[in-house]
Image (cartoon, rainbow, N blue to C red; front, side, top):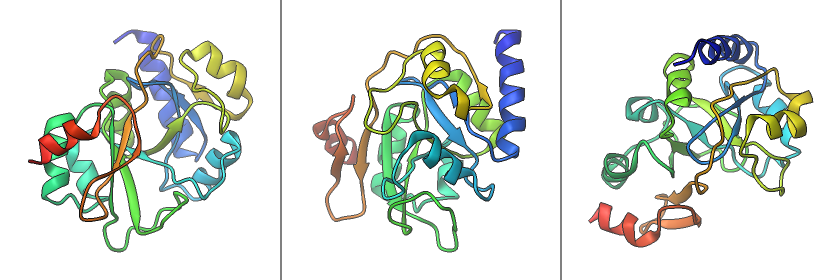
Length: 199
């Protein structure tokens, strides 16, 4: 990893610890991130994005073990994790009892994803789980370069970790809350693939 990237990760970790908003790469698009365990941090993220808090924030993790500390990873979820993580699949699960995070939306569920992007995973391995949503103003197209991120949201961001252009399709969001998997947002993985992985 380049020295500049390492330095940006260090700066991002310090900013996240203060509850500030940072820009990070993923394999799909750039994201804006906060540490959801720092009081007030997710409020700053909702404000930066002009996003209503009825729209829940997903949480990115470095690996499946982090996910298991936040959500109830039952058999179907474990099969999807095995098949598609790291990768562009966000899985909505029941939250673990006692997990008090202000992520917006339904307080009993949590959307989890492990990104297939080495810079993001290096950051997540050190920061722990982060609330991350696409880097754009709510309802606008996602931003795919660090330069466009700085131009649109720069005033709200403490740090931008630049890892070059992010060119992937958005992640598929699948809910496992009901009896059958439900696609909440179609991305690079379709329902047939999900059902095949669950078996």
